[in-house]
Amino acid sequence: MHRRQLLTFILASTTLALPLGASAALVRDARLWRSNDKLRVVFDLSGPVQFKTFTLQAPDRLIVDVAGAQLSGDLGHLNLAGTSVRAIRSGPFGHGDTRIVFDLNAPMQANAFLLGPQAGQGHRLVLDLIQGNHVAAPAVLASAPAPEPEPVEAPKAVASRGPHPKRDIVVVVDPGHGGKDPGAIGGKGEREKDVVLSIAQLLARRLKRENGYTVHLVRNDDFYVPLRKRVDFARQRNADMFISVHADAAPRLTASGASVFALSENGATSATARMMADRENGADLIGAASLLNLKDKDPMLANVIIDMSMNATIAASLQLGHTVLGSLADITTLHQNRVEQAGFAVLKSPDVPSILVETGFISNASDAQRLVTARHQQAVADRLFAGINTYFQKNPPSDSFIAWKQEQNAQRVV
Ligand SMILES: [Zn+2]
Image (cartoon, rainbow, N blue to C red; front, side):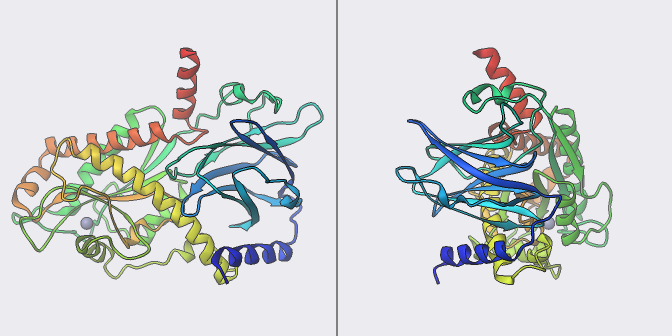
């Protein structure tokens, strides 16, 4: 069976099997409007929900995850003829959430927002689809609806009106190794675990100074944390991104410069990337399946969901990694000019964009000499911050302080 047919089949059959919970919000029905420049889909809800949207490529898809909600209506009646949407699929996802998948004929951007009850209408989730190229963006987590409702016909002011939740973007900074695991050791006894702890602490301090960020350090001292615990740490804190800081060794002592890695599910992009992943993973391997609590689900369904979620997360990780790598280029040579990919266990959060930064090679004499100085550590931390901040200025979660600030500034300009 074709993979997409298979997914539809599995999702359809699980829908039937799932009893409707009394407390869950319901997605009752959907309506569709067309105008020259956009396609609007309105989902009628039984109450307020949390949702996130993201896009996937090859084939182009738009995913809407509605937290704590079940689909009670049928989306099959929507007339999609003449639109860029080929089909709409839906099914239960995670723990009582609903995933709605738009199969697209062309890349589209989505603008989604919630509307409260007004003029005989109940809670609604509105999705505006606009044709255009769109690099797969990170999941955008939206929060409860603004108390000031807006009619569907005049949606433009919705995003900027009413009190905004203004949540912080949550960054988890992970200093590699620690405790019994010193990481790589330099020619003069420089220890990776000490260098990366200093850089990570400086990065955390820099992020804390900036409005709109909350930062958590996986370790703030010299102790050992298993890789699996590092991933759990980020997921438990609802991280918007995870950055693991390293300074490793290579057999070739002339190898130098910084590199940035993201997870790959299909093998490493280079021998170096594979070697780095093997070194970092050690015996501490984990599987992504257990992380999503999908054990009670059909194993095939679990794999498909992880696959979809992973693809979106990896795309966002690559975008984030690219920005951070460009920023690091201001202060250090780069070992690789592109974001490398390999099977790093510490990057295996299915839903948190994650990168691993090798700040330099501690096995290289001149890299090591710089990496132990406070001045260079500060410079690295500043460039990591700049890369992260540039990324989130471009891709702010819709309910974040940074998104809100941008809306305010945009209004002032108009
Ligand atoms: Zn390391």
